[in-house]
Image (cartoon, rainbow, N blue to C red; front, side, top):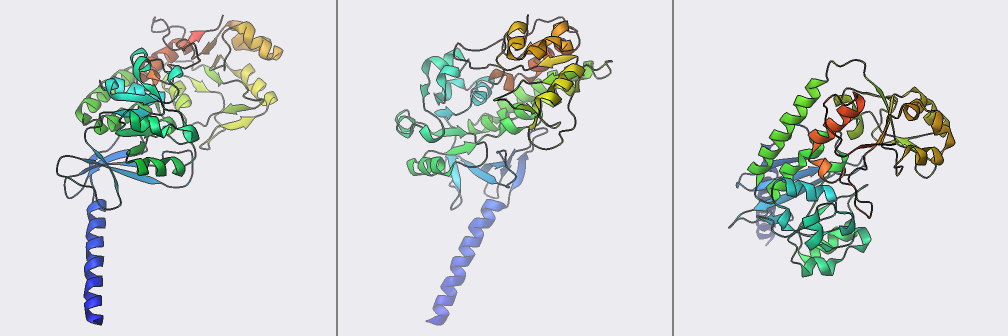
Length: 368
Protein backbone atom coordinates (compact mmCIF):
# COMPACT_ATOMS: atom_id res chain seq x y z
CA UNK A 1 0.00 0.00 0.00
CA UNK A 2 2.85 2.35 0.87
CA UNK A 3 4.48 1.68 -2.52
CA UNK A 4 1.15 2.29 -4.28
CA UNK A 5 0.77 5.64 -2.53
CA UNK A 6 4.35 6.51 -3.45
CA UNK A 7 3.75 5.71 -7.14
CA UNK A 8 0.51 7.70 -7.17
CA UNK A 9 2.35 10.61 -5.57
CA UNK A 10 5.06 10.51 -8.26
CA UNK A 11 2.44 10.42 -11.00
CA UNK A 12 0.65 13.40 -9.50
CA UNK A 13 3.88 15.39 -9.14
CA UNK A 14 4.88 14.47 -12.69
CA UNK A 15 1.58 15.67 -14.09
CA UNK A 16 1.76 18.93 -12.17
CA UNK A 17 5.35 19.52 -13.27
CA UNK A 18 4.43 18.90 -16.91
CA UNK A 19 1.55 21.39 -16.74
CA UNK A 20 3.82 23.95 -15.12
CA UNK A 21 6.52 23.34 -17.72
CA UNK A 22 3.97 23.83 -20.51
CA UNK A 23 2.99 27.19 -19.05
CA UNK A 24 6.55 28.39 -18.41
CA UNK A 25 8.50 27.14 -21.45
CA UNK A 26 7.80 30.25 -23.47
CA UNK A 27 9.35 31.41 -26.74
CA UNK A 28 9.34 35.16 -27.50
CA UNK A 29 6.82 36.04 -30.21
CA UNK A 30 6.74 39.84 -29.96
CA UNK A 31 9.27 41.81 -27.95
CA UNK A 32 8.39 45.53 -27.77
CA UNK A 33 10.95 48.10 -28.88
CA UNK A 34 9.74 50.79 -26.47
CA UNK A 35 7.03 49.48 -24.13
CA UNK A 36 8.36 48.10 -20.87
CA UNK A 37 5.45 46.22 -19.31
CA UNK A 38 4.21 43.68 -21.84
CA UNK A 39 5.45 41.04 -24.22
CA UNK A 40 3.89 38.26 -26.29
CA UNK A 41 5.15 34.68 -26.38
CA UNK A 42 4.15 31.18 -27.42
CA UNK A 43 4.53 27.94 -25.50
CA UNK A 44 5.43 24.39 -26.53
CA UNK A 45 1.81 23.69 -27.52
CA UNK A 46 1.70 26.74 -29.84
CA UNK A 47 -0.52 28.68 -27.46
CA UNK A 48 -0.01 32.44 -27.57
CA UNK A 49 0.26 34.23 -24.22
CA UNK A 50 0.46 37.89 -23.28
CA UNK A 51 2.73 38.60 -20.32
CA UNK A 52 2.02 41.76 -18.33
CA UNK A 53 4.77 42.83 -15.91
CA UNK A 54 4.54 45.56 -13.30
CA UNK A 55 1.59 47.52 -14.77
CA UNK A 56 1.25 49.60 -11.59
CA UNK A 57 3.01 52.47 -9.84
CA UNK A 58 4.50 50.01 -7.36
CA UNK A 59 7.93 48.62 -6.57
CA UNK A 60 6.45 45.17 -5.94
CA UNK A 61 7.23 42.88 -8.93
CA UNK A 62 4.09 41.40 -10.49
CA UNK A 63 3.24 39.35 -13.55
CA UNK A 64 -0.03 38.43 -15.20
CA UNK A 65 -0.40 35.87 -17.98
CA UNK A 66 -3.35 35.68 -20.32
CA UNK A 67 -3.46 32.75 -22.72
CA UNK A 68 -5.02 33.52 -26.11
CA UNK A 69 -6.72 30.33 -27.23
CA UNK A 70 -7.86 29.12 -30.62
CA UNK A 71 -10.32 26.35 -31.40
CA UNK A 72 -9.27 23.11 -29.68
CA UNK A 73 -6.78 24.74 -27.31
CA UNK A 74 -7.12 24.93 -23.54
CA UNK A 75 -5.13 26.90 -20.99
CA UNK A 76 -2.70 25.33 -18.51
CA UNK A 77 -4.23 24.57 -15.12
CA UNK A 78 -4.63 27.68 -12.99
CA UNK A 79 -3.93 30.12 -15.83
CA UNK A 80 -6.35 32.75 -17.11
CA UNK A 81 -7.37 32.56 -20.76
CA UNK A 82 -9.29 34.33 -23.50
CA UNK A 83 -10.98 32.58 -26.40
CA UNK A 84 -9.92 34.48 -29.54
CA UNK A 85 -10.96 36.88 -30.79
CA UNK A 86 -12.28 39.26 -28.13
CA UNK A 87 -15.52 40.60 -29.62
CA UNK A 88 -17.23 42.50 -26.79
CA UNK A 89 -14.75 44.57 -24.84
CA UNK A 90 -15.14 46.88 -21.83
CA UNK A 91 -12.55 49.62 -21.21
CA UNK A 92 -11.70 51.36 -17.95
CA UNK A 93 -9.41 53.92 -19.61
CA UNK A 94 -10.09 56.18 -22.59
CA UNK A 95 -6.60 55.49 -23.96
CA UNK A 96 -7.70 51.88 -24.52
CA UNK A 97 -10.60 53.18 -26.62
CA UNK A 98 -8.13 55.07 -28.81
CA UNK A 99 -5.92 52.01 -29.26
CA UNK A 100 -8.81 49.84 -30.38
CA UNK A 101 -9.97 52.61 -32.70
CA UNK A 102 -6.48 52.93 -34.20
CA UNK A 103 -6.48 49.27 -35.30
CA UNK A 104 -10.07 49.40 -36.58
CA UNK A 105 -11.70 47.54 -33.69
CA UNK A 106 -13.65 50.32 -31.94
CA UNK A 107 -16.95 48.64 -32.83
CA UNK A 108 -16.05 45.87 -30.36
CA UNK A 109 -16.28 48.26 -27.40
CA UNK A 110 -19.54 47.65 -25.51
CA UNK A 111 -18.81 49.30 -22.16
CA UNK A 112 -16.66 52.14 -20.84
CA UNK A 113 -15.86 53.72 -17.51
CA UNK A 114 -16.80 57.41 -17.45
CA UNK A 115 -18.69 57.55 -20.75
CA UNK A 116 -19.30 61.30 -20.38
CA UNK A 117 -15.53 61.88 -20.55
CA UNK A 118 -15.09 59.95 -23.82
CA UNK A 119 -14.24 62.08 -26.88
CA UNK A 120 -14.75 59.33 -29.50
CA UNK A 121 -18.30 60.21 -30.59
CA UNK A 122 -19.14 56.77 -32.03
CA UNK A 123 -18.12 54.89 -28.86
CA UNK A 124 -19.77 57.52 -26.68
CA UNK A 125 -23.10 57.14 -28.48
CA UNK A 126 -23.47 53.39 -28.03
CA UNK A 127 -21.22 52.04 -25.24
CA UNK A 128 -22.82 51.65 -21.81
CA UNK A 129 -21.49 53.09 -18.57
CA UNK A 130 -19.95 50.34 -16.43
CA UNK A 131 -18.74 52.36 -13.43
CA UNK A 132 -15.25 52.20 -11.98
CA UNK A 133 -13.13 50.72 -9.19
CA UNK A 134 -15.31 49.62 -6.26
CA UNK A 135 -18.40 50.90 -8.08
CA UNK A 136 -17.96 48.67 -11.13
CA UNK A 137 -21.36 47.51 -12.40
CA UNK A 138 -20.86 43.75 -12.71
CA UNK A 139 -24.48 43.09 -13.63
CA UNK A 140 -24.27 45.45 -16.58
CA UNK A 141 -20.95 43.94 -17.66
CA UNK A 142 -22.61 40.54 -17.76
CA UNK A 143 -25.78 41.86 -19.39
CA UNK A 144 -23.95 43.38 -22.39
CA UNK A 145 -22.08 40.13 -22.98
CA UNK A 146 -18.58 41.38 -22.12
CA UNK A 147 -15.98 38.78 -23.09
CA UNK A 148 -12.95 40.85 -22.01
CA UNK A 149 -12.37 43.83 -19.72
CA UNK A 150 -9.28 46.03 -19.94
CA UNK A 151 -8.23 47.19 -16.49
CA UNK A 152 -5.73 49.63 -15.06
CA UNK A 153 -4.50 49.88 -11.51
CA UNK A 154 -2.57 52.62 -9.80
CA UNK A 155 -0.82 50.80 -6.97
CA UNK A 156 -1.61 47.12 -7.39
CA UNK A 157 -4.21 44.57 -8.34
CA UNK A 158 -7.74 45.35 -7.19
CA UNK A 159 -8.37 41.85 -5.89
CA UNK A 160 -12.02 42.34 -4.96
CA UNK A 161 -12.74 43.36 -8.55
CA UNK A 162 -10.73 40.61 -10.22
CA UNK A 163 -12.14 37.94 -7.90
CA UNK A 164 -15.67 38.92 -8.92
CA UNK A 165 -14.74 39.01 -12.61
CA UNK A 166 -13.29 35.49 -12.28
CA UNK A 167 -16.50 34.31 -10.63
CA UNK A 168 -18.51 35.73 -13.52
CA UNK A 169 -16.20 34.11 -16.08
CA UNK A 170 -15.12 37.45 -17.61
CA UNK A 171 -11.43 37.44 -18.60
CA UNK A 172 -9.47 40.55 -17.65
CA UNK A 173 -6.05 42.00 -18.34
CA UNK A 174 -4.21 44.96 -16.82
CA UNK A 175 -3.03 47.48 -19.41
CA UNK A 176 -0.04 49.48 -18.16
CA UNK A 177 0.28 52.07 -20.92
CA UNK A 178 -0.07 54.98 -18.50
CA UNK A 179 3.20 54.16 -16.70
CA UNK A 180 5.30 53.96 -19.85
CA UNK A 181 8.19 56.45 -19.79
CA UNK A 182 8.05 57.33 -23.49
CA UNK A 183 5.36 58.37 -26.00
CA UNK A 184 6.24 55.46 -28.29
CA UNK A 185 6.18 53.06 -25.34
CA UNK A 186 2.66 54.16 -24.50
CA UNK A 187 1.53 53.84 -28.12
CA UNK A 188 3.08 50.39 -28.60
CA UNK A 189 0.44 48.91 -26.32
CA UNK A 190 -1.85 48.99 -29.37
CA UNK A 191 -0.01 45.82 -30.46
CA UNK A 192 -1.06 44.05 -27.25
CA UNK A 193 -4.69 45.12 -27.73
CA UNK A 194 -4.53 44.04 -31.36
CA UNK A 195 -3.37 40.58 -30.26
CA UNK A 196 -6.43 40.32 -27.99
CA UNK A 197 -8.60 40.98 -31.05
CA UNK A 198 -6.62 38.48 -33.17
CA UNK A 199 -5.39 41.42 -35.24
CA UNK A 200 -1.74 41.53 -34.17
CA UNK A 201 -0.38 42.06 -37.69
CA UNK A 202 -2.62 45.09 -38.09
CA UNK A 203 -1.45 46.45 -34.73
CA UNK A 204 2.21 46.06 -35.70
CA UNK A 205 1.62 47.82 -39.03
CA UNK A 206 -0.10 50.76 -37.34
CA UNK A 207 2.63 51.09 -34.75
CA UNK A 208 5.50 50.83 -37.26
CA UNK A 209 4.00 53.66 -39.32
CA UNK A 210 3.56 55.78 -36.18
CA UNK A 211 7.13 55.05 -35.06
CA UNK A 212 8.48 56.20 -38.42
CA UNK A 213 6.53 59.47 -38.35
CA UNK A 214 7.54 60.18 -34.77
CA UNK A 215 11.23 59.50 -35.27
CA UNK A 216 11.35 61.62 -38.43
CA UNK A 217 9.99 64.57 -36.43
CA UNK A 218 12.38 63.89 -33.57
CA UNK A 219 15.33 63.82 -35.93
CA UNK A 220 14.30 67.14 -37.48
CA UNK A 221 15.09 69.02 -34.24
CA UNK A 222 17.95 66.95 -32.88
CA UNK A 223 20.50 69.68 -33.64
CA UNK A 224 18.29 72.72 -33.00
CA UNK A 225 19.74 75.39 -30.70
CA UNK A 226 18.93 76.91 -28.31
CA UNK A 227 16.90 74.34 -26.41
CA UNK A 228 14.14 76.21 -24.55
CA UNK A 229 13.78 75.50 -20.83
CA UNK A 230 10.33 74.13 -20.03
CA UNK A 231 8.30 74.42 -16.81
CA UNK A 232 5.44 72.00 -16.10
CA UNK A 233 2.17 72.02 -14.16
CA UNK A 234 0.55 74.23 -11.51
CA UNK A 235 -0.25 73.52 -7.85
CA UNK A 236 -2.64 70.65 -7.14
CA UNK A 237 -4.34 71.05 -3.75
CA UNK A 238 -1.57 73.42 -2.66
CA UNK A 239 1.18 71.03 -3.77
CA UNK A 240 3.24 71.42 -6.95
CA UNK A 241 4.32 68.10 -8.44
CA UNK A 242 7.23 67.81 -10.85
CA UNK A 243 7.61 64.61 -12.90
CA UNK A 244 10.80 62.53 -12.96
CA UNK A 245 13.25 62.82 -15.83
CA UNK A 246 12.26 59.34 -17.01
CA UNK A 247 8.59 60.23 -17.53
CA UNK A 248 6.36 60.55 -20.57
CA UNK A 249 6.14 64.36 -20.58
CA UNK A 250 9.86 64.88 -20.02
CA UNK A 251 10.70 62.45 -22.83
CA UNK A 252 8.30 64.36 -25.08
CA UNK A 253 9.99 67.68 -24.22
CA UNK A 254 13.44 66.18 -24.88
CA UNK A 255 12.38 64.65 -28.21
CA UNK A 256 10.95 68.03 -29.25
CA UNK A 257 14.28 69.76 -28.66
CA UNK A 258 13.55 71.24 -25.25
CA UNK A 259 15.19 71.13 -21.83
CA UNK A 260 13.26 70.10 -18.72
CA UNK A 261 13.66 72.70 -15.98
CA UNK A 262 13.82 70.19 -13.07
CA UNK A 263 16.31 67.40 -13.90
CA UNK A 264 16.94 66.83 -10.17
CA UNK A 265 14.04 64.39 -9.92
CA UNK A 266 15.59 61.06 -10.87
CA UNK A 267 13.11 58.93 -8.93
CA UNK A 268 10.26 56.94 -10.47
CA UNK A 269 7.48 59.23 -9.24
CA UNK A 270 6.47 62.87 -9.41
CA UNK A 271 8.09 64.88 -6.66
CA UNK A 272 6.38 67.62 -4.62
CA UNK A 273 8.19 70.95 -4.42
CA UNK A 274 7.42 74.13 -2.50
CA UNK A 275 5.67 77.09 -4.10
CA UNK A 276 8.81 79.17 -3.55
CA UNK A 277 10.93 76.63 -5.43
CA UNK A 278 8.32 76.39 -8.18
CA UNK A 279 8.33 80.17 -8.67
CA UNK A 280 12.11 80.13 -8.99
CA UNK A 281 11.79 77.46 -11.68
CA UNK A 282 9.04 79.41 -13.45
CA UNK A 283 11.25 82.47 -13.56
CA UNK A 284 14.05 80.44 -15.14
CA UNK A 285 11.84 78.85 -17.83
CA UNK A 286 11.26 80.01 -21.41
CA UNK A 287 8.03 78.04 -21.86
CA UNK A 288 5.35 76.88 -19.42
CA UNK A 289 3.00 74.01 -20.32
CA UNK A 290 0.18 71.92 -18.80
CA UNK A 291 -1.18 74.64 -16.52
CA UNK A 292 -4.08 72.78 -14.94
CA UNK A 293 -7.57 74.11 -15.66
CA UNK A 294 -6.47 77.61 -16.67
CA UNK A 295 -7.79 78.60 -20.08
CA UNK A 296 -6.35 82.15 -20.19
CA UNK A 297 -3.43 84.15 -18.86
CA UNK A 298 -5.83 86.15 -16.69
CA UNK A 299 -7.14 82.96 -15.09
CA UNK A 300 -3.57 81.88 -14.41
CA UNK A 301 -2.78 85.23 -12.78
CA UNK A 302 -5.90 84.98 -10.63
CA UNK A 303 -4.67 81.61 -9.38
CA UNK A 304 -1.58 83.37 -8.02
CA UNK A 305 -0.76 87.07 -8.64
CA UNK A 306 2.96 86.23 -8.58
CA UNK A 307 2.53 84.39 -11.87
CA UNK A 308 2.00 87.76 -13.62
CA UNK A 309 5.74 88.52 -13.64
CA UNK A 310 6.88 85.08 -14.79
CA UNK A 311 8.82 85.46 -18.10
CA UNK A 312 6.71 82.87 -19.96
CA UNK A 313 3.53 84.70 -18.92
CA UNK A 314 4.95 88.11 -19.91
CA UNK A 315 6.02 86.76 -23.33
CA UNK A 316 2.80 84.76 -23.79
CA UNK A 317 4.59 81.41 -24.07
CA UNK A 318 2.12 79.48 -21.89
CA UNK A 319 0.31 76.47 -23.37
CA UNK A 320 -2.23 73.95 -22.15
CA UNK A 321 -3.17 70.51 -23.51
CA UNK A 322 -6.87 71.33 -23.30
CA UNK A 323 -7.77 72.27 -26.89
CA UNK A 324 -9.78 69.07 -27.38
CA UNK A 325 -12.00 68.48 -24.36
CA UNK A 326 -15.58 67.36 -23.78
CA UNK A 327 -18.19 69.47 -22.03
CA UNK A 328 -17.70 67.23 -18.98
CA UNK A 329 -13.94 67.79 -18.97
CA UNK A 330 -12.77 64.69 -20.81
CA UNK A 331 -9.38 65.17 -22.48
CA UNK A 332 -8.60 63.91 -25.96
CA UNK A 333 -4.92 64.53 -25.21
CA UNK A 334 -5.05 61.53 -22.87
CA UNK A 335 -7.39 59.60 -25.21
CA UNK A 336 -6.37 59.72 -28.88
CA UNK A 337 -3.08 61.39 -27.95
CA UNK A 338 -1.98 58.00 -26.62
CA UNK A 339 -1.82 56.64 -30.18
CA UNK A 340 -1.07 59.93 -31.96
CA UNK A 341 2.37 60.40 -30.46
CA UNK A 342 3.59 62.01 -33.67
CA UNK A 343 0.85 64.68 -33.56
CA UNK A 344 1.60 65.38 -29.90
CA UNK A 345 5.31 65.72 -30.75
CA UNK A 346 4.49 68.04 -33.65
CA UNK A 347 2.52 70.24 -31.26
CA UNK A 348 5.45 70.33 -28.84
CA UNK A 349 7.98 71.19 -31.55
CA UNK A 350 5.80 74.09 -32.69
CA UNK A 351 5.44 75.30 -29.09
CA UNK A 352 9.14 75.16 -28.29
CA UNK A 353 10.47 76.45 -31.60
CA UNK A 354 7.99 79.20 -32.55
CA UNK A 355 5.81 77.26 -34.97
CA UNK A 356 8.80 75.72 -36.72
CA UNK A 357 6.56 73.24 -38.60
CA UNK A 358 3.99 75.91 -39.56
CA UNK A 359 1.07 73.74 -38.43
CA UNK A 360 -1.75 74.79 -36.15
CA UNK A 361 -1.76 73.13 -32.75
CA UNK A 362 -3.98 70.04 -32.43
CA UNK A 363 -4.03 69.11 -28.73
CA UNK A 364 -2.47 72.24 -27.23
CA UNK A 365 -3.62 75.83 -27.21
CA UNK A 366 -1.76 79.01 -26.40
CA UNK A 367 -3.23 80.94 -23.47
CA UNK A 368 -4.33 84.45 -24.39
